[in-house]
Image 1 (tube, rainbow, N blue to C red):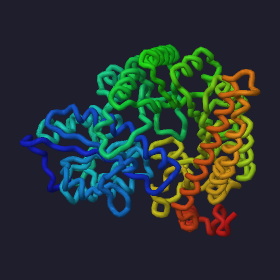
Image 2 (tube, one colour):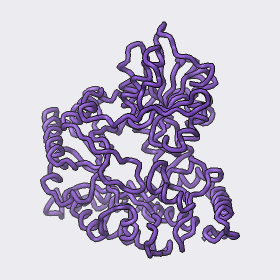
Image 3 (tube, rainbow, N blue to C red):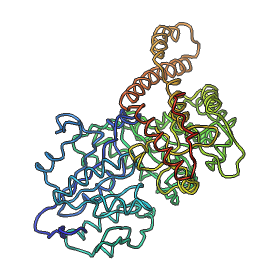
Image 4 (cartoon, rainbow, N blue to C red):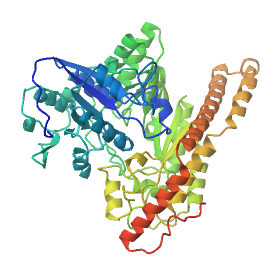
Length: 544
């Protein structure tokens, strides 16, 4: 702990405020973030709320509504909040690297007011640990934090010694101290955790509730930070979360945030049956979005059970329609199989949201080159042929702690953070020197073009046409159920494409694209100098 801060004495009730930092500016996630929240901080806060002698609250800066106190930037007014309800401890969520500059800004603010600052999240690995402890953070929670936060709160209120707590990093006498690594929480431990308490959120408005069932992922994708062993409790664990949220908050719209729904087939079928029975008994209808692998498309029994349970939207990580890129990502998929399985999902009645990464760097030794134009055409052709309902196309992000970051760092391709800071690590900006013959600017522009090609203003015409063609369902369609499904899908997709166009337009206006071009040029020049090159050939200073 930094000089001047002492362990609290248990003479009064203490307050801990968890903060989810704001996105740096408006981005493609901002609209939905206004009506949902990050699940991790709520889980940690729910554990903290069980501690006697503590008052707990959560502030989500991206979901801060109503008459909530705001500063001149539209962010929560933390000066007012701290005067109104003084917090002794602040817990910062560092799950998104793009929000780290805002996290450091808030840490400095609260540090000046004498709080103990704690942070946790996937960003804090490797060299980022020392960086954050130098930026007004007193303690870092490393790895899964439910048990660690409980023990740290005991230590701060005069209980156990800090150095006996597993999974912590802090400074002591000017030296970095990292305690023994805490193993991932077991299935038995997960079951004993409290149901996430969304009432701890202040000034938030939720219409989409995140819930979680599994921990970890077995796919080992090169670009992903989720690597731990899969741990999945029995279905009642998830059923309890959902039914509790409905009974407390009348929630009906849920996002199951786990990476791979249905990996435990028996559990998935049992969950679907139980949640269907609950809805039938209460005469209510839930709407679920899940993330799922394409290989589940051939399991008709599972798909039928999912539809009956209220699962409507499938978020699928296609990543790329280019076989060489899929191989580099450790994805054992083929584009033709991806298209065929997508059609099976559609035939079962699901809406499919496709998630892509544009311009993924080839592995060393791969003899593969492809222009930005040809890559863009491959993406457009695949999306059109598969009939994916909605998409997101992001650029590769060298996230802290991933194999991709280690590979690019070894190849000395990542642009210096002296030029391109953490705030740009959201998938919308080029962060490293791409494979030849691509240029950084081409990567930046083509990803944007693909999104604007899919989400366009002309979708308003399709919306109007759908309204005019609606009577044909009644008078000319023999299979009314099938006709309704087709009409609704077209109408719904047209609306989402128009909304997506508005979001992209707002994103373009919120970021000064010309300014980032200058930043990109400067970053490339610095990289060239570091590598001993005399000229910048990957970022032409003439546009496209």
